[in-house]
Length: 251
Image 1 (cartoon, one colour):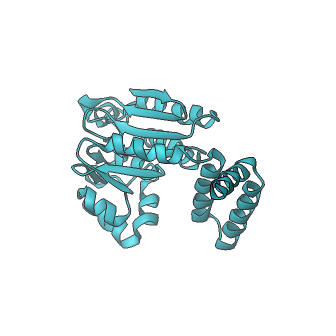
Image 2 (image 1 turned 45 degrees about the vertical axis):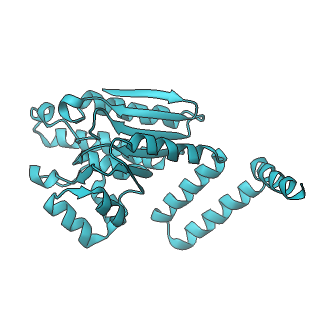
Image 3 (image 1 turned 180 degrees about the horizontal axis):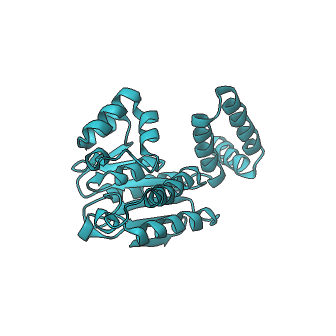
């Protein structure tokens, strides 16, 4: 199941299936996809933290449940359901943070890479284990990994299925912050609070322009960035911030 709690502009999504190391069955995957769509329709939502229950992050899809789904159509359904949900989350106006509080395996590592930011406990690890099941990534993780670490390193990680500890994950740029053991969620909350202090439209603009830069030609991305800057320059939030600065300097 997927548990959702809300605290103002912050939402916490917890995959709660500890008996399967938080592997996602069809119902959980469908609940996740619905949560993404509902969140995208909520203008008051600003940050989502995604984590797993009881010391594990996510273990991808539940292979026990999926053992009865053997056709190519079943594979397409699985890939499309989570692949589209993660792509929608990636382009959503809110910021997503993965609190990697324990092992992230296979599709769980793919989910983490689709988030905007990642906090990883020092005793957690990531592993792209799809190859051990005679599969490649299916939720977009291969493309995201290649863009993040380069072709050769992505090939090595996907073809060895080896575990990546927190220090190496930070070095490779797979995570942005390391937390003490048991503190990934707390550090993710602190990161969320840092983001929530800023103007919502400016935060959305930063995410949008950086995402656009990964997909648009360079000159087009530069033009889009200038356009966003000009629009927010004229916005009330910018001039309110400038007034606070000028008033402070005049005291």
